[in-house]
Image 1 (cartoon, rainbow, N blue to C red):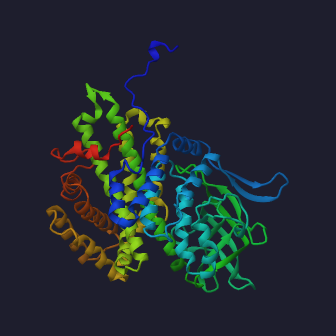
Image 2: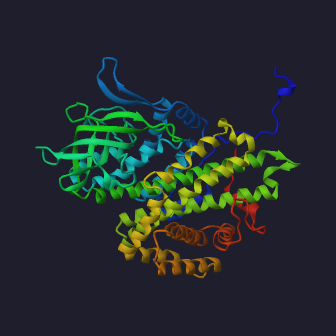
Amino acid sequence: MASRTHTVTNQPPPLVGYDVFTADRALSEAVERHLDPALLTEARTELSELGRAAGSAQAQEWGAQANENPPKLRTHDRFGHRIDEVEFHPAWHRLLGHAVSAGLTGAWTRPGGHVRRAAGFLTWTQAEAGHGCPLSMTHAAVPALRAQPDLAAEWEPLLTSRVYDEGLRPVGEKAGALLGMGMTEKQGGSDVRANTTRAVSLAEDGAFALTGHKWFCSAPMSDGFLVLAQAPGGLSCFLVPRVLADGERNVFAIQRLKDKLGNRSNASGEVEFDGTWARLVGEEGRGVRTIIEMVSATRLDCALGSAALMRQAVAQAIHHATYREAFGGPLVGKPLMRNVLADLAVESEAATTLALRLAGAYDAAGAGDERERALLRLAVPVAKYWVTKRCTPVVAEALECLGGNGYVEESGLPRLLRESPLNSLWEGSGNVQALDVPRALQREPGALDAFLGELGAARGADDRLDAAVKRLFQELADLEGIEARARRLVERMALVLQGSLLVRFAPPEVADAFCASRLGGDWGTAFGTLPHTAPTAALVERAGVALG
């Protein structure tokens, strides 16, 4: 019998047992907007099923276990043979297996595949973000492999499979496979052309032997890897299988796993190649061009992953404030707290709306729409830069809404906060993204036309948006000193793009709050500074989660 002093009062129930997809109005509305109506019923059913799984107590427990029991490197077996295997907690395999079975690596081969997969990725990774890395790598490798049709024919059915087939075996014996990537070297970082890994041609057509190292190798337990190395013809892209066709282990020495700030459940390794067998992908000397399609797809996943973190943090903050009593009533009823929550909700919705718009552009581009393809060339680095930058302050403010309870590990918010900087670093940090935009402006004028066309679709709908677009035109008209002010330019491009989407598609209260604050200047420098006239109650209600 518990002592009366141990009675727990004024604590919210856990946010568990709900449909993560359906409860997210911004996300579910975006799916309806960007998906062919003929696909909607099936897609809603699939995504709602995934949403219920993501919001279940079981998935939340898997997420906690996977992070509390990070992967372990086993370089040798007990007899001294080199094996270079990474061991994961069973919870990791359950999370990854559920994701693969839900089609989160298979967007390229079905109608509306990118919108459906993006919505599923945003939904499912709210349960645990770390296993999103191999999902993203595997999904994104498909367009790069298509540069080498024979390799694509062998690997693509396995990468898009809904069967999670763990363990290292020849891919010809597997029902599903995962693919990782290794570009970064310790002397180069984002400067991939500084790579020193060497590739020497072998007698077999298209085969090479690699010698060198990779400072960051994503998902080193995967069945294969796309890597860059210096061939006689220049920097080239290669596919490195972990196990060769005859069953022999390829030379793939994992020196150590990185001890990371967040993303603890996922393995990132340093690997060495020493005569490692590899196949050329695409043309020799065109490695960056070959792998850039993979990089672009993973950059969109960075925006999706950050949108997922923001959404989960905002949902937790609103849930806590709904049930927590303070100063004579629920926290959610206090005007200042409601302003904070509404401000966070607007930021989260803007991120989700932009990310799903780009997923829709991928589907359209795959169907042959060149204007949508051109839009992606600018909008992907813009979105990757801005959405990932906004993630950390959103999560930190959401944590503060829970007070000291949010600072405690069991709340789950510290894990979200540690995870929040990752997507801004991964696949090119902020400066890399910002500098990619003026490069595209100078080399691909069609990309700017497509971007401006997207903004023009909202012309006249909001004076503040129109004024912000005009200021952007002035920035674009003068590219002098563009490198030093690239971040400011890209930030403005992101804000007007989000504003255009919200004005067209979001409820009026969301669009008005965004335009007044982010574009009209009626905002402070911290969350919770929306105009005092903003309909904060409606904004919070839209972003909240109703249990049971």
